[in-house]
Image 1 (tube, rainbow, N blue to C red):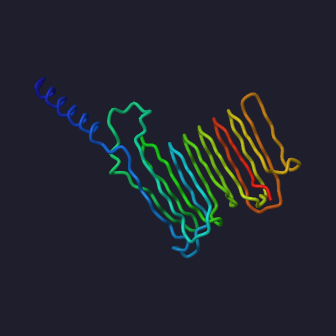
Image 2 (spheres, one colour; image 1 turned 180 degrees about the horizontal axis):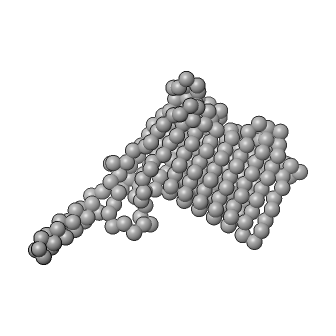
Image 3 (cartoon, rainbow, N blue to C red; image 1 turned 90 degrees about the vertical axis):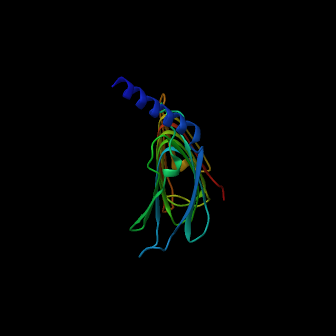
Length: 216
């Protein structure tokens, strides 16, 4: 019995070491979601990113394009490397909403997206950052730990709100008379009311918000 256990331990150790050595370091996935591939055109993008970064820019077009680099999350305690070849993107369209997600543990994701301006944005990030350039559409972002860098174009918004449990909010380009800011010992809140039609809602547990608006 003891010999059998020793053999099993040796076999397991061999495969563990083999996995540590031979697993791929990164995986690159690209794709495109046509806005008009359904009965009604897509008008919202929903993404869940447990650990990672999102870079997004807005451009006219008839599709959402994405590129994601996946790497092993080395901050965990697991001895075994993730098998990146087994990872795939969950890409679904329901009604007028497109959903993108890689539902895997022990990996880091870095997304680069190009999204048309008529598509509203919804991000749920566990640990990580979002960097959004020149948006004009509605945005909802929930981040556990991380930061949000959001640049909006000159278009006005109906309502903008941002809150951090521990961290800071920096804002520029919005009319001061239409904005209220509150600061406690560690938390911060921002509210803005304008004349536009879209909204921004950013909530971060621990981290910072940097919100800027291009001047006319």
